[in-house]
Image 1 (tube, rainbow, N blue to C red):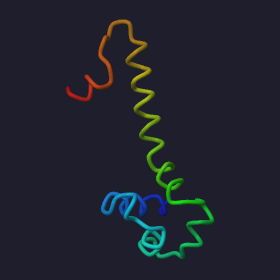
Image 2: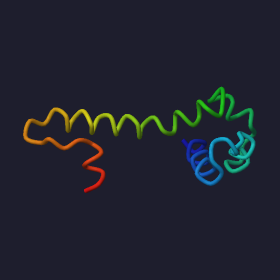
Image 3: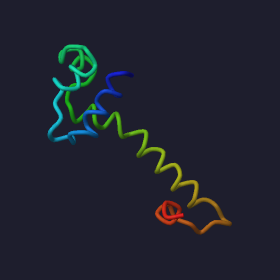
Image 4: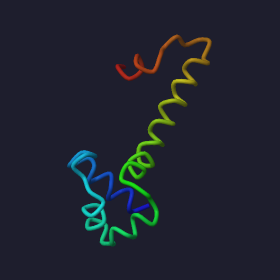
Length: 80
C-alpha cells in the first residue's frame, strides 16, 4: 500500500516519535482522515510496517533451530 511506503519514508527520516500522520498524509497526497480510515493510530501504522520483518526474522530463526546439521543461530548468521 502506498500509505505504508510513505509512512516508512517519514519514519526512517524523522523517527516514529517525531513523525506525524499529517506529514505522512502530505507525502502521500491524501488527507489525514484517509490514513485514520485505515489505521487508528500512528503506532498501529508503524506495527503494520515492521510486522513482516519481525515475522521473517522469526521464521528464519525457527528454520535454523530446526536444522539438525546446522547449529547456527540467527545472530550468528547476521554476522556472516
